[in-house]
Image 1 (cartoon, one colour):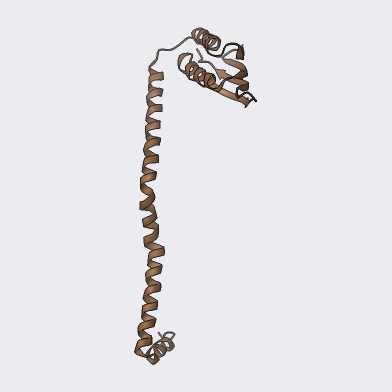
Image 2 (cartoon, rainbow, N blue to C red):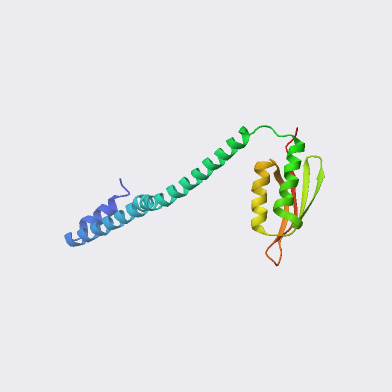
Length: 160
């Protein structure tokens, strides 16, 4: 308490009006600190809570759709590699046509694309994943000047 004695003496020496002004300034500084340290962060959290909640709801809905898709795929009967290959070849021929060539090495299929339209490639990937149950493993694709895709895509077919 000896350290505070000079401050107390100075306080007593101030006129009542000066004491009121110093007390008001101290109260103002205290309220500002209270706002910046405790209240403002809570208000900012409340303001952003609705947007975060909507974003999390969207993510949850997407995860539920993916879960339903995974369960549907798991419930499908097993498919032989020959059947998967037949379906894969049919989808390449029907969906990609002359813009794709493929080579087969065991369970791996390497697809070479030349100016394949993006919407056809996206539709084909969805179809080949669900029908032939082929999974993309590697992709080295680039957009060409015509807006199509060029490059290679490696797929893995289901094992026996």
